[in-house]
Amino acid sequence: MDFDEFVRSHGPEESAKTFERESSKMLDIALDGAIMAKAGSMIGYTGDVSFERKSSGGLKGMLKKRVTGEGAVMMRASGSGHLYLADAGKEVQILELDADDEVSVNGNDVLAFEESVDSDIKMMSSIAGSASGGLFNVHLKGPGHVAITTHGEPLVLPTPVRTDPNATVAWSANVSPNAKRDLNIKSFLGRSSGESFQLEFAGQDGFVIVQPYEELTPDAGESGGASASSGQSINVSDFL
Image 1 (cartoon, rainbow, N blue to C red):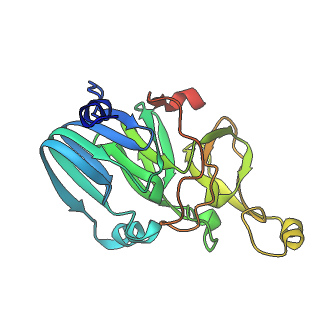
Image 2: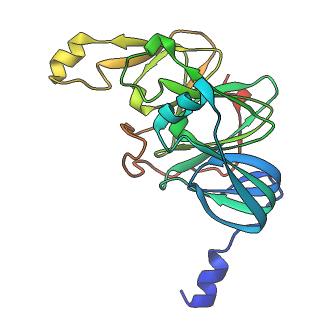
């Protein structure tokens, strides 16, 4: 491939959508106003865009820092142009929330969301003291677009279901997890693992998003799965 062909074939694709995947691992935001994004996720932008680090005081501010450390800090991007985001080579998934849609996402897996989306930190009191990275999750309520990241292509499981906490990315707000331990599995494996400690989602008519990777820390690993096949956003109501 010669130089001119390389430039043409790898250039951005124009889109009228606010949130669009430039590739399976890059998010293109057609910015005309402001959005919230994970701090450090900007890889490039065109136009006139400014960035402001967001933090809040009091208990909520402390909880935000404890979600996944520095990776959970958000920034506000405002202006007009195209903003390109990515996070450690993880796959980008776009969720379209209606006004009555709510989803709870592992703090380290939130990439960006529109300012019309209401956000809050939720402590999972039922699993307090566990080793789960989802002890503090970001609760997002529509309307608006939300971009999350996964290691590999995700699987959306209907509830009731049990999942490995380190592979659990998000779940619908109409269900909540409880911690369960299977001592028989722990004894069989001879060590603590995601199989011995599980999240149980007992509610009906919900969904849980899992990834083919156990994310032990905010900086863990490289992508361990196939690229997602569609560049279209997903309406959360389609899962229910």
